[in-house]
Length: 332
Image (cartoon, rainbow, N blue to C red; front, side, top):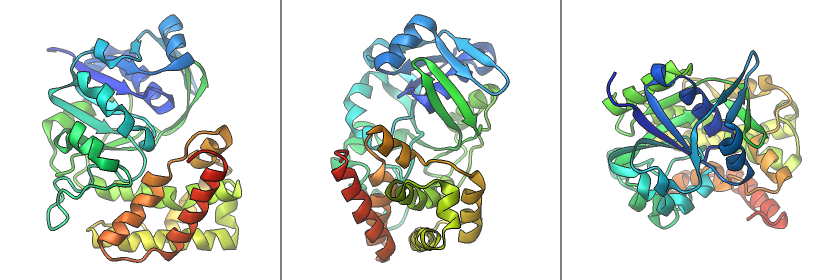
């Protein structure tokens, strides 16, 4: 079978733990040698008792190498970043021991990725986004040539330290910034597929990023401002109209950047309504006293709007409100 694929999951919380547990559960099938970078009580529990994954039908416990010091692990084939977007720039220095000459960095992070304009072509080629990569920390310290895009669809939660509960979803969509079906993307796809995930390699990963971002941009801040669940936001005529206006502004920006949306805005809203009484991640972060992903989900869309000369009046209003909400809560 050849040498194992070395995969380090950096930020092995709920989503990272879900991916890591399944990859590590059957190394013969996946061909993966998995390690986790975690912290605090979660790390201590994984070291002591292994990582436990609770799914609808079963409970799985795996022994997996876990540390808070990446220098213990050495260079990897893949580093999968599953942190909140605002936490990523701060770990660039700590990641360095994991980065060999051919290491790929998989950005399983919500929102607009820092590498967005790498291999983009045209006058915006190589543009760096200050909202998601202040000072170019990731661009310089990781290098855009390492980046593989990843759109994360599963939902999971940490039920207790060392215990991850899978809520729904199995798909991690992968894609090279260039659009090519590279061997490194396909190899990772095969490992994830062997672990039981859906992991297609898409030629237009930015299209997929925008379809997910479309909802996160609007529903996340509205939910944190109103404390309402998705179904309530979509059912209320006022908040539904605000979300729709934000989404249409974003669509105009994305289409100027060459994105093709596979569905229209009203179908996307209906899809969100169908999720039901779900508290968005931004609302959960606010309630837990954690920093919210405002910059990757909202500020970045404003920045892209300025780059393509597309106004964002509704987004601007909601952005101002959610930034103040975060400051008042001591989270920004």
